Length: 238
Image (cartoon, rainbow, N blue to C red; front, side, top):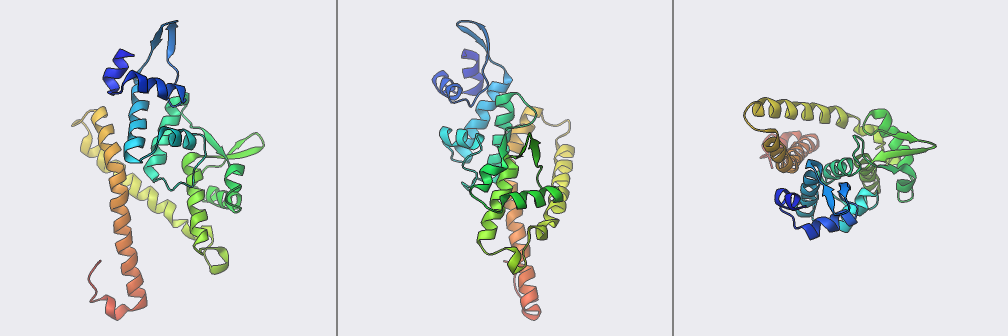
């Protein structure tokens, strides 16, 4: 515990709270008063700190999201990335805890149909668990976001079925592949894995915002050009 305090920078009483809430994997008990912690505990604590600091989540909110509740809270994409990582560490699994599709359907009547369409498009992975279909936290959040888009009027009746956004998948894959290529090429042999992980942890949320603003500029430019091609030629880029 003393070494875990030193490596994580977190007081042992706080660590004990994280253990009691089920946010950390149980240590290996070597004796009644002796426990063995490893690097996964250090990493899990760092992820929790990032969720608290970067996403402004309380420990109870983190636990609720890990359990598949509160998916419509409006948390950002990187929040779910950290939650997926925390779940994998917590349960010692390559795959993370899955959310029953029925629990999403209670809040969103179109959830099952949307999830099936997204699954066919390769956007989400519907996992059969016995007789029940389930989604990862990240995939469940994608379905929840589309429900919010529906509430704004983007529905089949007005010409906006979920199939309309199939192009997002290809665009996301191309951007992500290029990002990974540039990062790996730039960091190879220059920085340690630990430093690379810290860089990505800080940069990914920023780059999501950066890319989002570029998309917004391009979208508005295209709308202006479609509405008034003559004026758009003289219009400054927002």
